[in-house]
Length: 360
Ligand code: SF4
Image (cartoon, rainbow, N blue to C red):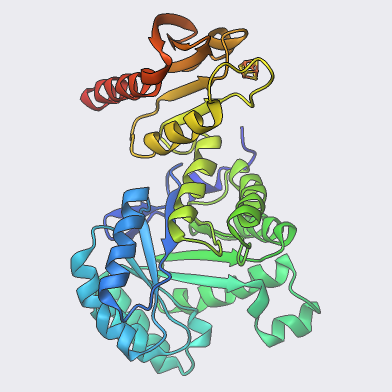
């Protein structure tokens, strides 16, 4: 059991029809890579992210053109829209007016108090939250002078300063992130934040790298944090198609039993006993179960030597046997299927189990 139950104990914050915090659920986010002013491309990308299981999407709002596109984007998508703004309070106001379900802006960076008030009041009026995004790479100068370099304490202090600005204006719908590219620093910062901050935490290892390296790095860092009961939402940041970010996030949450309605695949590493083309079958099945929203465990094994019995916990699975496959449920063989139709048969069985789950 995790030592800290921060995730559940945080203040629930509503973002559109999704709630971050106050439960054990961890919400998956991603960010578009298109130019936000290009409505068609942005909406198309958001739809791909939605299909992959993204629950909240963020778009950058670097200029007026982007802000002007927000109402149209909002109209064409089904998941809550977060608008990312740096410094410019006028863009923040436009984003809020344009239908943002949440904005990401650091109140300490907005400038004059009336500007901060204008943004906070507009957010309050629309009932939308603000995410404070602390980044180790862009800490305030006075904190760098105080601590010498970006430390976990400095990052949390930065978050607390931004939080105070909002709380002084009677604003509490806050989500906080403390991203760092250094995995150990990110872990420390989130641990420290969990001790001092009762708002939901948005997890991320920033600039983690390419699909391969970034996935490993993110899973390593965020895995530690999630395991401690910390984090109510997350984004995996990859130099890759953002759909991959969502897939990695889903897989990571599945590993910790934090994705309630997702199917998981168990597949063997293959060895000299292999009887079927397991690697391509495993990939095909993995792709197939992405669309299954039921907690089904599927197993794909290269042979029947240790096969079905080794995957007792699997709801359904196949094991290779000479020229054919054994279809099994909970470790017991149900029937033999020809190799050519093995994968199709497995998919049908997966669908039946999913239907049974949906009907419950
Ligand atoms: Fe090898 Fe069979 Fe085990 Fe796969 S299931 S690793 S093929 S013994």
